[in-house]
Amino acid sequence: MNRAFVKDPDDAGRPEEVPERPQSPHPNYVTPGGLKQLEAMAEGLSAHHDRLREAGKLADPRELATVQRDLRWVEGRLQRAIRVDPAAQALDRVGFGMTVEVRDEGGRIETYRIVGEDEADAAQGKVSWVSPLAEALLHAQPGDEVIWRRPAGRMRLEVLAIWPGAATN
Image 1: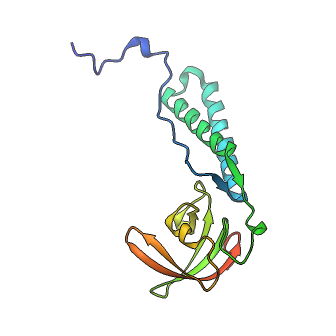
Image 2: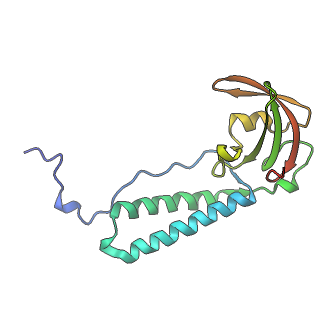
Image 3: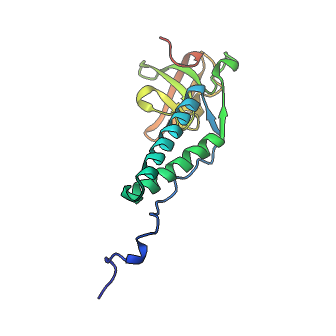
């Protein structure tokens, strides 16, 4: 009989294995808000882990393994976190944590904030500092034109304004 789909009783006590979440090869720059998000994620995962451990044999072993894996990942991100205060940077050039207002070739005005990888959220205009858009904008000054190398093709952007922190307008 083929045993490929038969559960081995010897596996009953073995913990579930889930693949590790890879850590980014880039420095983990974080804004003050991004650091708080990571800390909150760690607290939530730790509390979830404690609840699963208290449940003992009633807990889903795969869920426990997943929570443990995610907790290791976020703890690794926190250990490597490099907090950058946008207000402490030069205000004449685009830097990490700063908000940038740009005009594209079609005249549309957009606002982006350059943040850490874990804080990035395109729907909120938060772009990772290692993204092609951020790479184009970093170190630019108001009045500069930059080229954003996108998968859909290059786009010229004019930097209109920059300010530290989140968008205020």
